[in-house]
Image (cartoon, rainbow over all chains, first blue to last red; front, side, top):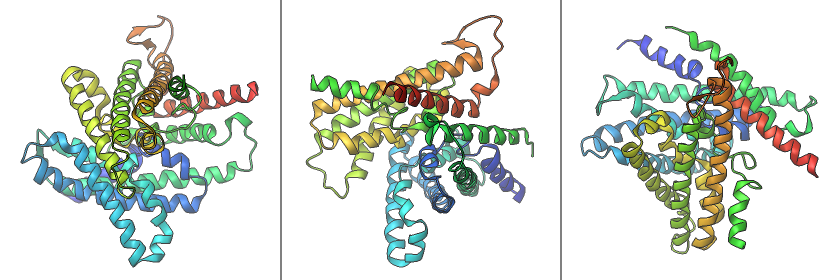
Length: 202
Length: 196
């Protein structure tokens, strides 16, 4: 397996199948936290960290525990539990050990536990990289790259959106469309722009 | 009468999709056809009902600190039941909903109701709350998916609307979903402001 495969997965998850704009995962936080650039990017970094780690953790669980014992139907419960406890653990750990890091993205960690993007990437990995109950070659690395790419795509969309919304504060939006509705319409236009990437053939 | 109030509020005043703006991922992703919308809505209603009843029953036993993991386990159990049930009895629907059935577990509406409502109220009230919220979610999904299916596919529930109408692919793809929900929320706000 050469490097180009990983780059392809990365580009595909960041641009072509952007997690927010074309898969609709993590929309709640996308609408909620994207009012200012600073918090939006911090949230993005936190999500990138957690999506990478959750694909790193969920792959061994699925491959070494659930498949050998034929417990695939327990995927939902086991993944959500492991991810939730991991996020909780990380929060406690960086609060004690790295207060600066905690100030940057620690407060966003509790929000992430039930973020669709984090759980979605774990489910997507098992859907994509396990065929007929067997892991495809190099699927562990592929899962991690996909998890990382999902986070980067999320951060990119958050960054762009928060920039637009900061300017939107000064523009005249009809009263009934203020805040949430206009954000959706802008997201729709952004998603249309990202649709342009879908013609990509690598 | 009070129970009816709990039921009605989910349908309109506190509608999860249009008012509280929660649980958007499945709303937008599966609303490409009305069949999908109904299936997703009913699955979410089932999970809400089950989790609300159980959370309400165990509300006095669960310690404050570990309540969220406990609720998540309860919810995940019902999601697994719904997932297996769908795979067995509606395999086509299950395939078209894909990964969004397991994703009900991170649907903010379900955990939100457990945290805000059923962990504080008796089971009977929680049942009505779950039914109201679930059906409110379902009708919102049906509305959005009907708009998208008519404009984007030219059909409704698989039947052609008109022979001459040229559907636009835009509405079926991702941007159409975001545009539809943006305009719908805007319009609802407009009518609410106007009535005051």
